[in-house]
View (cartoon, rainbow, N blue to C red):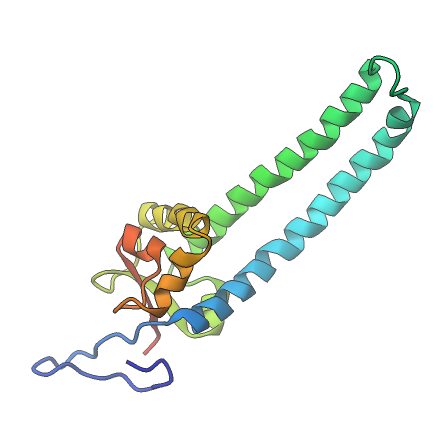
Length: 177
């Protein structure tokens, strides 16, 4: 079915409307909005944390003499900076998981980006996702990512417009009727 069609087609012998599946491009637009929603506050928090850490540790790093053993103060500064980076990466993973899983299993069945584009996530029968299934779908996105985004692009050519993570979690992204 063409993604441009705004109407819902009915199946012969069935009075309930068939779902209109959301294709690649509309999902990509929703994903862009969701990335902005997540990355702007996370980027600000990262800049503040790392900026503060570097500000506090710069004098210790400058005292280090590369020709000698690294002084404990410089090593502590180094570990503090990389600990901050690790902390922000872990925070990003947790925020990513909770943002998608809570919203896609919630009453709207959609993240802010999907709501903006009139989309929602359902299970294969059209029902709302449980938090566990929404969490599985969210973590399966890492597999879609590790395939050099081919897992995401699959939404452009599969019959029900499912990306790899949708196939793994047995979910659909449909347009609101």
